[in-house]
Length: 111
Picture 1 (tube, rainbow, N blue to C red):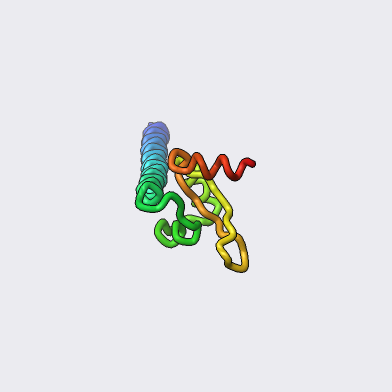
Picture 2: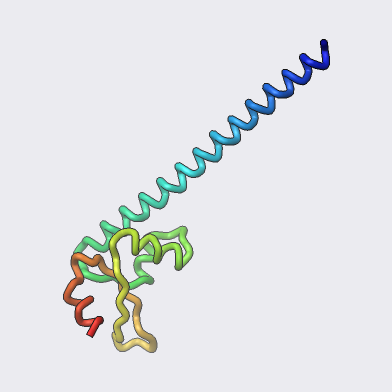
């Protein structure tokens, strides 16, 4: 009888631990989504300001905590498109702007 009681208690403990682990995973997932949402909102505000386009370097300094490729994915999800311009620097500058505000620049790039 004591073996059955011990097995039942062990089973209940295993279920409780599994539920707590699942809850913790869900909280981490939710926090990750919140971080991405806030970053996308910040990017939208940054690109919807006074300038039609901003350099990737400026965006990276303002929206930290992401790798370059992750930040580029956030930019695309925010409705931004990438442009390259020769601004007299040794290399072309990577610029980003909202699609809606840069339709004419996108048309020029496609030619």
